[in-house]
Length: 625
Image 1: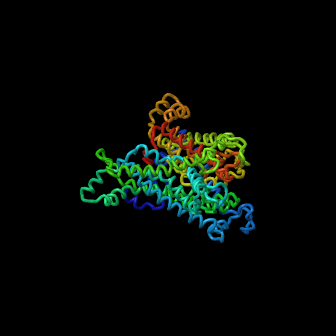
Image 2: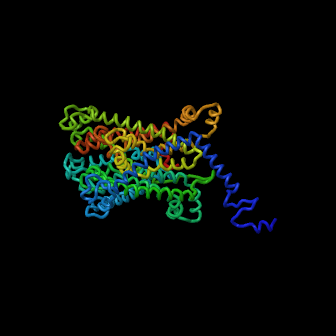
Image 3: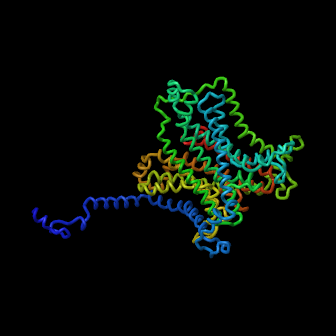
C-alpha cells in the first residue's frame, strides 16, 4: 500500500484519492456553507434590510454632497472657461492654483488662514486660563455658590455665539463704518479700531463663548480625580505647585487637550462672529472668505476652500479621538475607596467667589443686559427717561425704510419665526426618529459591517464645519440631478441639510439608548406573533421615548441657534430667525436685530432647560461623563 502511494504520479489522481487542488477540503466546504447560511439568515432579518436602506439614505445625504462639492473643485465651472482656458466640465487644477498659488491667494486663503489660526490660538489660551480656573474652583474647592455658578457659567454654551458679537458691537462700535455710535462713543470715549473690529474682539468673543467647553470637559475630569493621589504626593513631601504640575495636570491632560481641539474645530466653522465684527473692516477668516466667494458665485474656489476647512477639521478631531483613546489608559476613577475631597480656600474663599462673579458678569450678564437695553433705547447709551421706548418691539410708523414697525408687528419676523419652528422642528423630529432607528440597527443587526458603516457615516457631519457642509449641499442640490429636482431656494434643502447635520447627536443618543435595552421585551413580542414594525411601534419606541425626546430636542436647540448652515442655503422666502437678524444687521437696524437675537437666545436657553428636565440630566455635570 505504501509503495502504491509513493509511486502514484504527483499531478494525477489515484483511484481512491483526490488531491487538494481538485477538491476543497471538508473544513473549507463547511466554512463556506456556514457563511452562506448566515448570510441567508441575515437577509431574512428585517433589521438587515432596514439597515441597508438607511445606509444608502445617509450615504446620499452625507457623503454624496461632499463628493459633489469636491468634484466642483476639479472641474471647470460655468463662467470660468476663459480664465481657466478650458471648456466647461473639463478636469482642471485652475481652482487649486487660484486658491493656493495665485496673486490673489493671499487674500483668498493664506491671510484668512493665518487670521483663523491666530484667533483660534488666542481664544484657546483665554478659554483655557479662565475656564480651567473656574473648573477647578467649581470642582475642587469650597467656594461659595458652587452649585449656582456651575449652571450660570455655562449659559454662554446655550446661546448663539454671535449674541455676544452683537453685544460687543453695541458697546464698542465707533464711526469707522458709519451708522449709530456705540455706547462708549455716546458717552464721550471713542474706542480705537482694534477694540471695535477685527482680531481682538473676535478672539475675546469666541473665548467667552467657548469657555464653558473647558468648564464642562475639564471640570468633569477634575470631579473624577481621586484625592488620595494628591494626598500621597503631599505625604512624600511634594509642595502644592509640584503636586499640580506632576500629578494633577498629567492626569487631566486628555480632557484638557480634548477641550482645546474641540474649540479649535469650532473656530474653523464659526461664521456669525467674524461676519459681525470682521467683515465691516474686511478682516476675513476662512469661513467669511468662503461666504464671500459663494456670494460672488465663485463655486470652484469655494469648493477648494470648503475642502480645506473640512480637511483641517477632520484632522483636528481625529487627533482628539486618538488622544481620548490614549487617555483611557489613565485611571482617574478609583475603586469604592476613591475620594473627591474639596480644598479649603480659607481667606481666599471670598476672592474666589468674586472672581467667578466677574466672569459671570462679563460673559453672561453684561452682554444680555446690553442687548436688551439697546432694544428699548432710541439712542444707544443715553439713559434719560425720554430715550427709552418700546418702538423697536411694538412701535408703529417708525422712521425707517425697511422696518416701519416693531419686530413683533412685522410680518417678516413672524414668517421667519414660523419657518424656524416648522423647518427646524420637522428636521429635528426626523433626526430623532432616524437616530433611534440607527441606534436600533447598530445594536441589533447581525451584519456587523452594516452597523459599523452606519455608525461612522452618521457621525461624519460632526467632522465637517457647518458652512462647509452648507456649500456641499448647495453643490449637489443647486441643479436637478436625475429624478431629484433643484432644491435651492426651497425649504426642502434646509430640512435635508438640518437632518444630515444633526445626525451625529441624534444617532449617538439612539445608540446609547439601545445599548441599554435588552432583547427580552422584543423576543417576548415576537413569540406572540408580533412583526418587526409592530415591535418597533408598540415596544421599542414607547420604552425609549425619553431618549427619543433627547434625540429631537438637542437637534432642535442646535438648529434654532445655528447660523453657519442656513446663511448659505436660506433665501428671502425661507428666512429663519438667524438669517433674518443678520439681514437687519446688514440694513443697519441694530436695535431690531438685537431684539430678534434675544428671541433666538431665549428659545435656545429655555429649550436647553426643558431638555434637562425631560431627560433628568444636568449639563453642569459636564460632558463626556
